Image (cartoon, rainbow, N blue to C red; front, top):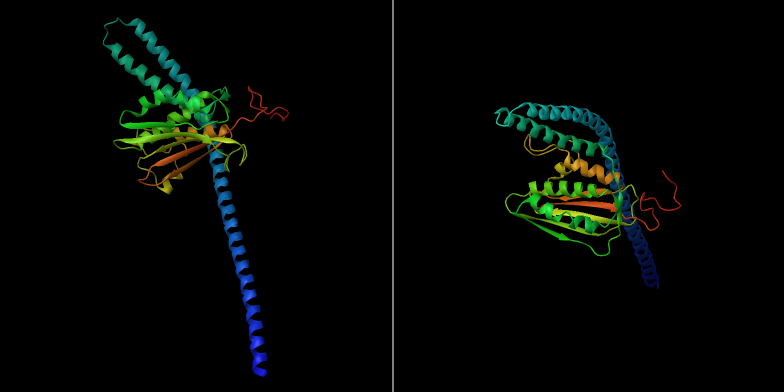
Length: 302
């Protein structure tokens, strides 16, 4: 009798321990999920803080660059004007004409640099309008093919039923040109670049609000790729891995500034030796927005 009671007690205790163990297992799983969610939230918070810090840095440097560019542009205008006056004073067969042509060419290249600086500083006037992203991309393809050269294959994969975006068409041109040049320079010998567009919700980091309607413009290459340390710095103004005299370090900083100005965000996926993808997320124009201002009807104006 005692043995039977002992067995029953052991079985009861075993069931209680098993049930407690199951509850403990469930609590451990819930704790793991909570810890994982907290880690993701902290990682996202750090990424957003880095994004905000980069925007503030760009804004402060942009103000400085804009002031320098305006003054520099004025001096270039004087140089170009003086060159033209000097040419009028010289006979057509003067040996000095060639030297003046060199001066004019250098001044014009400098003027292009000031335009880049002004674009980086966002002091060039923008004229946003409602755009079909696919049309804007296809309108650039011919020029982009010439830009990257015959040794690189360029393919375009437009998405279906894209919502329109509201931005300056020249800014789309700047984004594509800078990203394609960056991709071209990352490819040694032959290679390929792929441009894609598709619907995609806005991720965290977009000023228009995460989860809102958006479009994705992706530029992918099979070039040399980048290390994580390099990816962290590529949007810094004046940072470049190119030899001295071959890069200004403003191309990707300009892209970052344009995307931020249009309330979007940009991400980079890259591995050394495995190529790079630049993912540009832009907010879609919502129905009811004013086609001239991009402001939704009934919404408070800034």
